[in-house]
Amino acid sequence: MRRHDRPRLAVLALAALLGFAASARAEGTGRIFVSNERGDGLTVLSAADYSLVGEIKTPRRPRGMLFSPDHKKLYVACGGADLIAVVDVAGLKVVDRIGRIPDPETFDLDASGTHLYISNEEDAELTVLDLATKQAVGHFKVGLEPEGVLLNHDGSVVYVAAEGSNLVHAINLASGKRTDIPVGTRPRRFALTPDGKQLWVSTELAGQVDVIDTATLRVVDKIDFLPPGMRREDVSPVALAMDRAGKTAYVTLGRANHVAIVDVASRKVEDYLLVGHRPWGIAFDREQKRLFVANGGSDDISIIDVAQRRVVKSVPVGHYPYGVAIDD
View 1 (spheres, rainbow, N blue to C red):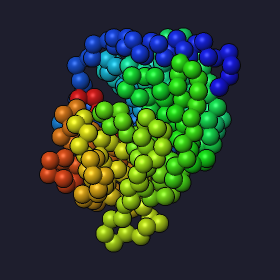
View 2 (cartoon, rainbow, N blue to C red):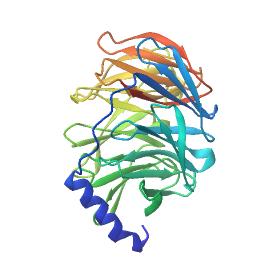
View 3 (tube, one colour):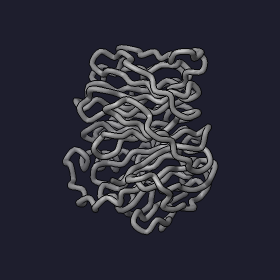
View 4 (tube, helix red, strand yellow):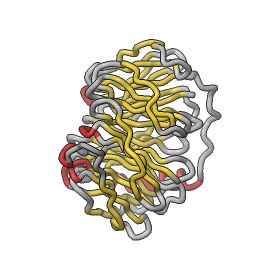
């Protein structure tokens, strides 16, 4: 981290810890947004019947997406254009472009909706962006090819997955201290248990999820995956979704073309669901009755009925879908 950034970041951490109230959430539009990494745009579907609502042209290579707390805006990382696009959710159009941010891929947003924490893949850096001023207010040096970013529940610590260094970084935002946690090969994305005690990280080329104890910042378990009939080298876990109860986690397995269902308490795989080709992003609807999976290799999304544990529909979207966000 750059030394002059520490006072600013201490203020950011204090703001998160105080829990600044976010704006009231707008009524959901009932729309599903899918970022198409090679299509340079978003596909918008109806969450009611999965019909096409529209297409939104974005700057190049849209990937990670997050709603503002009130769901009026959708922030989209456009890595090919080195910026964050801001989409008006009701109007279905890009209304702002925030840059220059080198090769953004994924990010997290604090509870107040004021700061984005963005992984800069090419610069091996985490940027803290003030959305009001559209200026970077903090920088942290991290390992090679950072991707996954996640704030802990009280906003005091940010976790960053460095793919090229096989490390997870835990950065204390008040002190600026960075703790490096060795994990499996090519760490990608995170899920945090509701009690905040376990951080799950997918390790793509290891074919596993590593479980980190957030108190000791050490790996305490590894979860292996091998769907029936698949080769181990094809199993490439990426995205994770954990239910609000902290009972069940879902992991997309990339080239293995499956989603794994994992019991969180026992850390045992309970089932595998066949989805489209190269599943990447995954997201729940608000009631957590459905899961939406972006299949980059087959240009579609799979819809999973959570209670029945089965895929109920596949819907074509744009070219090389990366992520899914639901405004319901």
